[in-house]
Amino acid sequence: MTQPIVITGIGCVTPLGCDVQTVWSNLLAGVSAIQPTFHFDASTFPTSFTAQVSEDYDYRKYVHRPEWHEGISRNSAYALGAAAQAWRLAGLDEFDGLDRERLGLYLGSGEGVLDFDNYAASNLAAWDDERGRIDSVKWAAAANERMDAVREIEQEPNMPLSHLAMEFEAYGPAYNCLTACAASTQAIGEATQILRRGDADVMIAGGAHSMVHELGVTGFNRLTALSTRNDSYATAARPFNRTRDGFVLGEGAGMLILETQQHADQRGATVLGRITGYGSSADAFRITDMHPSGRGAASAMTQAINDAGVQRDQVDYISAHGTGTKENDSIETKAIKGVFGERASSVPISSIKSMMGHLIAAAGAVEAIACVLALRDHKLPPTINLHDPDPECDLDYVPNEARDASVKVCLSNSFGFGGQNDTLILEK
Image (cartoon, rainbow, N blue to C red):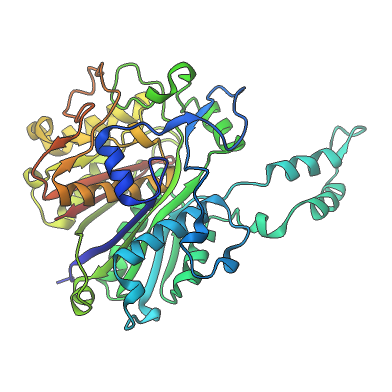
């Protein structure tokens, strides 16, 4: 029998706040964090708004060795703050008996932000008018002169992992996955498996990402995935609403401290919740589209429920992927109906992306944290901007206002481009 895996720390840095209590209060109040983009001038873009972490956020107030992290990209900066919060809440900063070789990391983190200005300057300096293309030799010389090597390496998706390993002296298993919008849910699920099989005592698990930059917004605009509701940006994120026209791009990080029950008990840690089930599947269909039957999503949910050993009628709340795209919301609804049958209409479901946007690789971890808080406080965050439900989305999405509810078992969904589906079961 595998030993139980418990959550002893949580931390987040998001557009709704840079600490857990602020984020939770704003979620329950139905606050929208969506505003005009300030990381760059997006005024001429089809989508000129995003959900961004406050400009006042400073990772240096969270770390012991700021000199080790100079020049980091936003994703690493957010990861450090979220992990430090979780670490301290778990009481690990005051625990001397931790075996660092059995302290591991599993992150679902995306790439860092490119040095766009100097990259563009290097392109211009290397342009060959006669041949109508960039001269590679000239480009290398220009880039060597203009571009900073540290900033370039910070683009790598595993850099947040490296910064956390240094900061917390984690010498154990270290993994990073980048399975698009499902990444941090996968990371938490896989970290649970590492603990179950006895390869670590403690895992820092979660995700960090920022695609709020010129290339990120351009790419999603070209895919027609983003809302273009520039005239009413604060209400642009409308999961399950008939007038939804795409998701709102966000950024941030969410981190959890996971431990074996035995390790947590031995050090007298306070347990916030448990991860009891994990399921993962691939649609094997199209790069940007979910299978219209919802088969992949349904498979991940079914696997997680079976892994947890709970019955479908024990699930009290579903944290939906709920992006606000036409396709995602209707297919996720179909998949939930396929898994829960007649009971689907009585299970409360909500999407916190309606308030903080879509944090891409970090989304699942922050949504798992919201589940931990729902289990703790018996409150469900709402899906805001849900005033005109899509007839195809006819379930209980906790519209517009938070709700008191008895919550013992949560199911949290994350679905990513490329057909990646991951689901967690969290219990009180």
